Length: 178
Image (cartoon, rainbow, N blue to C red; front, side):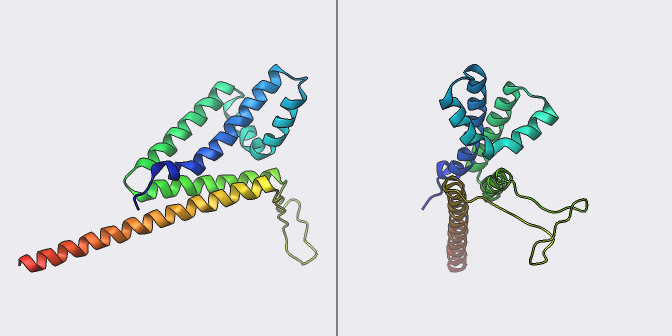
């Protein structure tokens, strides 16, 4: 089985599409603020990427054009990483996308960790509480992310095995020629 760059790019693309759809919904909500459908779409997408776009807007300014440039540049970087010959690039692209999706889901669930300023011990005595909302959308995104990472591992191990087999074949051929 040969690795398919499109399958390697599928999960990072899903995360980027979610981020882009939220920006598009925000823009359309600004154009049609009285539309209940726009509010419904925006309210579904906003929790998944609220913290990310808030940080981007705070540090880089609140420009939709800059947000689009960030999304396109990230998509191009992920696409080129999935087409690279070295396996570490597509590993990195998929695993970073999975970590980012997990952080998006955790931040949208209003997860809390205690700091030195406000430490609230749990009833079991642990100094922090982590609450993650596993709705069907969040669970589906995480499931797709784990499937994408599993595909990365399978593709990498298969390529490693094929390289090992071809090296063994060359060594046998070289030993026979000598």
